[in-house]
Image 1 (tube, helix red, strand yellow):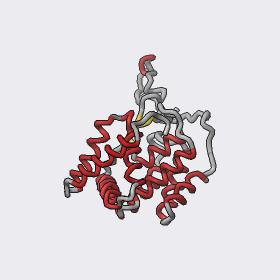
Image 2 (image 1 turned 60 degrees about the horizontal axis):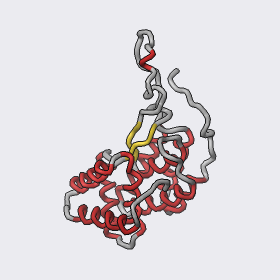
Image 3 (image 1 turned 30 degrees about the vertical axis):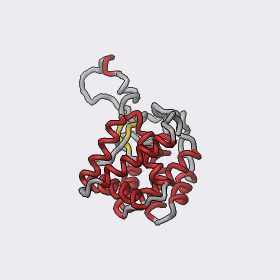
Image 4 (image 1 turned 90 degrees about the vertical axis):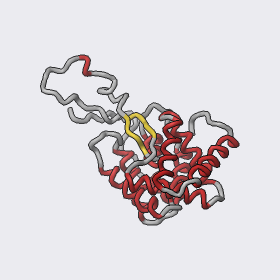
Length: 226
């Protein structure tokens, strides 16, 4: 991914500490609290580092650690309380809801779409990072595909995550109201959800996302609610 990160050894150490912290508690709700606390301590701008830590566990041969993490995401999905990261929602522009004349001060950075953000789970974050203009440099296609397949393989260790996450993605793909996703992003999320629900392998799910036909050019402007 396109930013400097700690050394591989530092990432392995961080992954070991995370798994140990989760394993120290049998309460799924507390484990979710631990996961969310890590995301909060890293901060919004370092969510990709959190994804890298998850990737270390996903690439390991420690199936117990993988199930532990995946089950914690399953708990998050049941609670609709996903440990998420924020990316700029450039499609979230809308006019202020007022019947009075529009003051110049209303045309803030938020009006022009630079500020609105929503928290995204790991799969949504990777997809938006790859497809949309955000505060980050675009995530390349090869890295997106590899990271997505790895993330799905990890999440598949949990029955709840394997069942509930594609349902969430399918619902997100139908939602045009918040403006967080472009048409191209919604199409990718729908493809991921469909392939995942169908029981295809993580590599096949990632490939299905890559095969979606582009429906809009990155430079296109999408005006909403005008």
